[in-house]
Image (cartoon, rainbow, N blue to C red):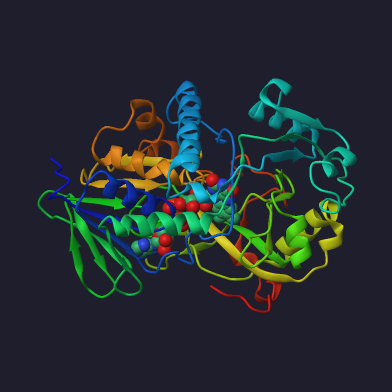
Amino acid sequence: SLDPVSSKILIIGCGTWGSSTALHLARRGYKHIIVLDPYEVPSPISAGNDINKIARGRSRHTGPFSGTEDDAVWVSEEVRIKATEGWMKDPVFRDYYHETGYVIAATKPENVRELEETERPTPERGFVELSDAEAFRKTMPEGVLTGDFPGWKGWYKATGAGWVHARKALTAAAKEAERLGAKLICGSPHGKVTELLLDSDSGDIIGAKTGDGRTHLADRTILCAGSNAPQLLDMKDQLRPTAWTLAHLKMTPEEAKLYKNLPVLFNVERGFFMEPDEDNQELKICDEHPGYCNWVTDPETNQRSSVPFARHQIPRISEKGVREFLQETMPHLADRPFAFARICWCADTPDRAFLISPHPEHPSLTLGVGGSGHGFMQIPVIGQYIVDCMEGKLDERMTRSWRWRPETAVDRDWTDTQGRFGGSGVVMDFQDVKDGEWTRVATPRL
Ligand code: FAD
């Protein structure tokens, strides 16, 4: 049994979910918490190391749910309510939440219809329909949206959604966990987990080994390594490491002022942006597409897997997507050079529900993975659920929705777009992008 005062807990990964887990363990009085990460916080390869992320309504899932549809609806609503409460009230997070509202849109009629089903954008729920370019332009101060919005249909909602400063929230969670006594071992090789340690008698996981050869023994091990988790544990095809692309444009001080407090603008086929960050005055744009894998075959086992790598450039075709999005929304910025670009890795489960579960064969191992492209906005509370799971008291509907479910990944269709739109409409492979087909952003930085 677990005693917070004496039990040793090891967290692998101090990214979005690992830092939240460390924080909530420390708040529950755990005294021996060690968090390992190959990078100092905020890790440059964490999906959460970003100037902003969207925080909005119901999370989107696709495919057969691991629990029932009722479970899924309840779980996503419950997590949204609790996370929003966290953003508004928790002193660690509240400075980083900006409830600026949002514009959600699509272009193809079938996608507009799908948005109608998933968002339920009725006036009673606070949505205003946007059916022409003028209506879109009016959602922001004059001079921001100057485009023609060709074929766009959408809705504006003033409250209940907005954006969060991701990197600052993640860093604040890790710092608070540290202040409460968690020990962060960050950097390489000493923070980089190279393998999980298996007890040969019981078959249980008893800790992890790091790149410096040290072993870290623990009563419970929590795997929060994001898209890198499949490199440490056989995930039975339940995670597909997939990357998306983002670029920043430098704004002038005048533009940054004009662009302050904007609603998020998200076209599910084209891309999205939020207001520029206040520190560097850079506007982040993400183009939409079903994502990139990086398919590599291991010559020894002949196993094919998508292996994440870091790169502070994006494929030219994504640059084209970003510029087309700008052309439709803010043509005055469409030719501005990028100040920064990077690929960003997440890991999708087949149904895009999270995977928060004990491991069936290793009872001391808890999994906190499977962000599936929508796992940042829950940072104020996700660690609570992961700790509940470790303590064996996770809500039963969450337990069903987020369980270990290899049966959903048998003969997995790796090309499944999983409800994502845009770009070429297919999941791409970085192996097909030649060296000359990447951007050359002048000063990439970590
Ligand atoms: P990460 O935050 O990636 O953390 C994994 C950690 O593991 C990292 O710190 C890494 O350094 C560490 N690690 C790796 N290997 C090892 C090892 N061997 N040993 C120890 N540690 C290791 N979500 C939203 O809610 N809203 C959004 O608007 C949104 N936009 C997104 C845009 C993009 C482009 C992407 C890619 C994702 C977006 N997401 C969004 C999803 C969200 O970012 C992820 O779901 C979430 O950050 C995943 O958190 P994580 O802790 O699982 O992974």
